[in-house]
Length: 488
Image (cartoon, rainbow, N blue to C red; front, side, top):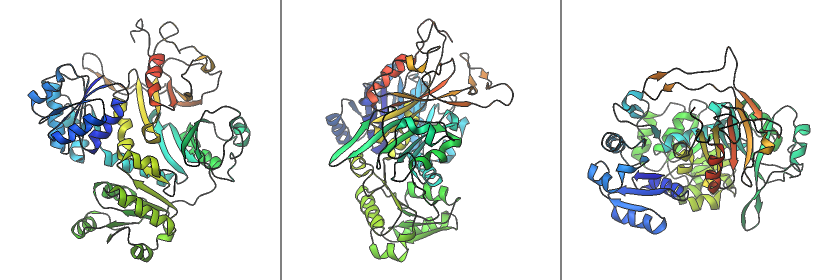
C-alpha cells in the first residue's frame, strides 16, 4: 500500500515505524529537513521537505497514486486542510487526520466528504484516556480491548500465585472456571535477563505465576476471567496523576466523573489553569512528582493507581519508581520512546504505555485488507489482534463452512472468538445513497462463541484472531479474503 504521512513528530514517526515494517511504501512530508533525514536513516521510507497543504508538495510525495493519506501534523487546521486537498485535488481514497479539538473531532458534518473529507479521526490523548479508564474499571487487568462493538473483550492479565488457574493447564480451564466461556490465546513468560518468551497455547500448557496471559471472552464474563488469573484486588478509589498537560487534563476530566483525584503540575500558571477548568473534585497541586517529600505529604502509600503522564519519559519513569517504592499499589508510565516502554513494562512499573500504540489500532483498521472491523496493537506493537468479518460461501471463501480445527492458520496464530448475528452498521451504497442499518430479527443479540475445534464458520461471522507477530498479518488477510468470484 502506498501511504503518505504528513508530519514527522512523535505521532508521525511512530505511525511510520509501524507501517514501514509491514512492507508499505511510505513517504513522510514535513517542513523540518533534519528530522526527515533522521527518519530516512532509521527506516526504509522517503522524506519530502515542504508544507503539506501545498498541492505541489503533495504531488512530489506521490499523491496522484497514493492509497492512504495520514495527516498528523501539530495543528488540527493543517491536518483538516490537507485532507481536503488530498480528496479534492488528488482523490486519495482514504484520509485520516489527527484532530485534538473536540469541536472539530465530534462534528460529522464538518468531517464529511463535502467539507474536510476525513474518513477517520485519530487522537492520541483520547485513546490514552479510554485505555486508562478501562484500567480503573478492571484494576486486575494490564489492558482491556474491545471487539464486535463491545460484545467481546481481549484481556491482558498478570497471573498471580493463588489464583484458580495458576499452576494448572489450559485443558483444566472449563472444569476450574465453569461459569465463564473464555479462550486463552497467548502467554508471555518472564525470563531472567531475557525478553519475555511467547508460549504457544495448547491444552497441556500450564499457567505460571508472573505470566502475562491474553484471554478472549464475552464482556459479561470479564470479571470472572480476571478472578481466575488474579488474586482479589481492591477497586480503584484513590488516583494521583503526575503531569497536567493535554493528556493529564484529558484523563483527569474523564476519571473525575468516577472519583476524586489529585494531579501534580510543575508549572504554576498551568496549575492555576487546571484548577479553574477541571471539576471541583480534582485537587491540583503545584509541585514536582519526583519530590519524595511532596508524595509523602499527599499520602502516596494510600494511592491505588499512580499515573505518570508528563511529556518527559525520564520523569515518568522516576516518578513511577519512587511512587511504587513509597507504597502506591499500581503505577503506569507514559513513555514516548518505544525502547523505554519495552524495558520498563512489567518491572517495578506495572504498565508502560506508548501513546502511539494506544491509538494505532484505530488507524490500522484502514490499512488492513479485507473486511477488518477492528485492530488492536499489542505488546508494544509486536503482536496484534484482528476482528475480521467473514464474507462469501463455500465456493468463494476458504473458511466458510469449515471447522475451526480444519482452518490452516499460520503458526502461533489463534482464533479466540466468533461473534454471530452482529448488526450491519448504517452507511452508503456504491451510488452514495444512505443505507439503513441491518440487524438480527426481533430482540436477538449478537452471540459470542468460544472458538472450539468443531465450530463451523458462517458467512457474516466476526472472527477475532490473535497474531503473535505482525508479519503474519498478510497471511491472515489472504486466508479470509473471498476469492475473485465473490461479488457480495
